[in-house]
Length: 72
Image (cartoon, rainbow, N blue to C red; front, side, top):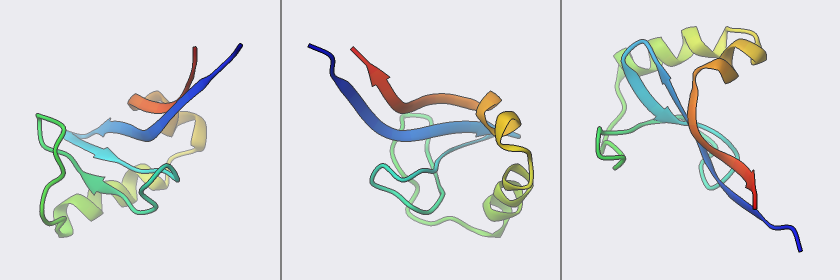
């Protein structure tokens, strides 16, 4: 039997750790060091996210530090 465990992908770019993906969250959101969501996301975060978003998809994946679908 093969199973998959999927969670929202987590990325780290230019000092920001954030989640972004289709698994429960369609919009980007910054994460605290303990993995909890920040209550608000401001202009500074969205400026950095916009830079990351403009990267080619392969380069974006290089900044992924967790999440996504894993086979077990």
